[in-house]
Image 1 (cartoon, rainbow, N blue to C red):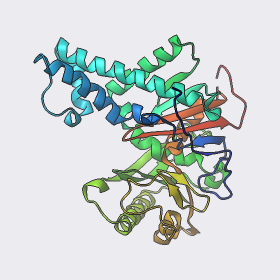
Image 2 (image 1 turned 45 degrees about the horizontal axis):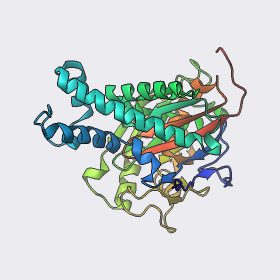
Image 3 (image 1 turned 180 degrees about the vertical axis):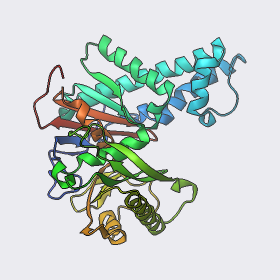
Length: 362
């Protein structure tokens, strides 16, 4: 029986008419994001999420338990990435082999997902995929990425897989530097960025360091604040109020330290972003209803931070995976088409076409 699929995304078929969730950015065209590819098992991306790795490991442990050979204790979901990394490095042979077996299973799943994405028009010419998200931060994540790359190569697929170079938590902030034309930042040395997720909200100041790298390749997070909102279960309004307090605090500290903060806030948020700054869908894991027609995140943030320095605040919002991928934009200039996958609670995704010709051999 043929496999049933359905695909929806924000793509070139729905061009943006405003600054938020835009298809055309200063250096790239966003050819797709937030793809929702389905097969008979559900969303294909779920096969390469953090929970999918847990399922691989748990299934292996279930087989071993039948003979009393499971070398691990406790619930699989409660074993942290650091603990699994430690088992690889310092565990006995049985423990290390079990973790490696789970890595192999997950790598096969990741390669399967990439093959499926590569069948889409927006991914057909992808030459390189940046892998981000919290899972990439671990050694087991790095091994799974490298193994998936080998699997794809042996299949004859000429696609590079590279881990995101910034810390995954910081990539979601640094990418905001590529949401606006560079001339906007000519009189400034930093900007404000927000990364909103289903468990955490992070707000910080990104140093542009344009003198070191005019292409923003040396941009970095100066300071940031993390709020684990999932632990407090706030309402939507409480979350927005807290975000405003975080932003004002970050701006004040940066200005006190002598940074020239641009009147610009870049926001990364889950879901499909409408040109007016509303969220069409995909924000179901955020506290409260962020998809309501009576709620606009951009307007809410602007009300809380109406000005930075002597200028009115400009805000640009895009999907969080799009922004995390943009953090790697300076390193992607030797290819024409590239993409990002962010492995976390789910699988975030975006694809890009560079607006300049590839600089081969750079």
